[in-house]
Length: 156
Image 1 (cartoon, one colour):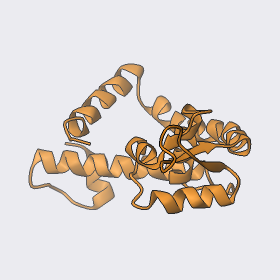
Image 2 (cartoon, helix red, strand yellow):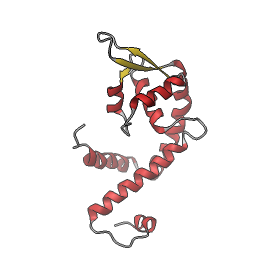
Image 3 (cartoon, rainbow, N blue to C red):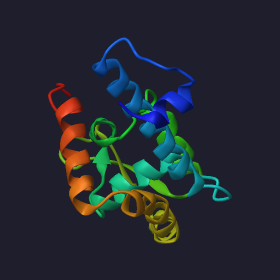
């Protein structure tokens, strides 16, 4: 299929087109992850922490329960409690008891967390501009459609 994957993996052929396609998706994902991580250099923030802040910002001022944050994560964090604790320790998130059910632990972004997002969001968007620079709008839409075809059929 393509020369880039053959050069990158130093492999001349693949067992099948679907294996080559899968490897291409994994390589592209890793490449995007490296761009994504550059946005957080020097900010003392991980991609997972940024994702939690972004999710909670979308629910501001209500917040979400842990399971709801986990459901919305790009990379599902195995220990959401510890991830939230780190953000709480930094004053970026606060925990509170949920309305009708006092046993339900909720989390919401703080003003400090929202201020950090204002600073970081343009950096993340800037890193994602690589996609805009390399693909036409039609290719971007097609890529999204194909990726959704791969992962969209999986149950939550």
